[in-house]
Length: 426
Image (tube, rainbow, N blue to C red; front, side, top):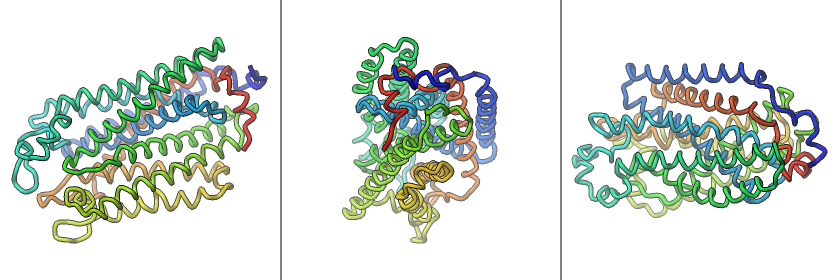
């Protein structure tokens, strides 16, 4: 075991150090959930359901990103990220609560008078723009083997089941190694990651299609799962940066646990995924624009023009995403100083998290349309319920992380790579 394991941070974190923060996080989460529920009486069930879908999907995406980063760490036998990995392992405890928080959408789809509260294909009598119904739609009939209520319910709980199972195995092995230092736990996590990465890739792709893409089930895109993957990892990296700097500010990362080189590495990875997101998003847009096939272009038309040809609000949101998701963070993170200066990279990470939320809104909220088939505007009372949903679900996720935080060592003190991580240099 490395001599670094005997430093002060190797001690078990005090439960008192996070208990108060955990209680505050849960209180904020409950308040956000209650406010969102009360919004039904103000804006109606459909608006609240769409807003809740944004909130749950946002935090689920970040949790999936954490799961992916933990497994990638193990599969490539990374050294520099060993300390950071422990905080992601705590974050994985949120999956159970995310599954519970997603369940109201499933219940509403199952037991509502009409099943099309959110997803139009769930209700055969749902009238499509043009007069015919879903049951009469040839395109839906071709996709009905996948897009049906039974498959949606089973799939949704299977997705969360897979993510919780993988998270449980990864957490158990990592935490157990702190106790006995047995190398078998490292091998177990590598095996889990080897089978978990393809399972997670397939499940996150299917989840993105079921939950988000199928809101416009006529649309075709082979890039959608990769787009969702990019946002998952970007969100997790940004949260990782925020957590690292929070622990540093609290004084937890002392005795050589934290160094600038680790911050530079995670920031550089965030920079790489900024470019990756831009590549995927541009490729999807360019291929659809170039082919100019109505079955594909309509998705973007809904987010640019009204039925009378006037520009709608979503056109400007698209520009915000273009510059906010890529141009701004790309230019800022070209700088070594910006990537390694705590208060600067924290602001960049928070900026990315905000733009990911806007990106999800761009993909989900235009599913609500007026009588002309135009997407309802972004700037309206609906935005309030999106924010209360994000705060509500986020508060519960933060509480789950903080409850897990004091249950094991601050860092994986007996991981074979811990010495390399603590002495990491560029």
